[in-house]
Image (cartoon, rainbow, N blue to C red; front, side, top):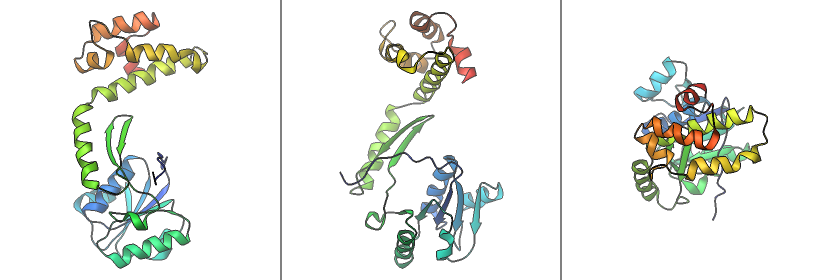
Length: 225
């Protein structure tokens, strides 16, 4: 395995995207969703990028890329169809010892971007180590069908339970068996994720009471987290 899997916290970090077309737009949207401070350099911009700029979600510079654009940046993504420009971005980033991704050019990147499935706080990434982005895309679509929005609600519930338990001054390790129970135990042959999918709050509350006792009601927990 060539690549070291990692999830980066880029909230409020300065990130540069060079290229304002379809590929660049997709990269920018993901960065913005993760809370990055994004600057885009390009002569042309998609409608979506212009909307983001109008809402002050990104900064854009309508001109050619300059090496100085990397000053103060945490990472850079090259998303142009100009091979010479992409290579220059890669070389400049290496000089600055900076994280660099060039779209569809894994050989000149020091990190690659996986296909992702997001359901709230659930993040599933699929990588073929750059060998076949098309297959990664196929796997993403398959997982999107398998993992619905109930998983986002489930993690929201788990986070609220964890917060409540920690508020009782218990050690996190003491809760391990409780979390395993809520994940694995079933009521009427259905687990909590299936209950959430069916919006069966009555049985969810029964299961919560059996595991955690009084004070763990589904609707209240979902509002407090």
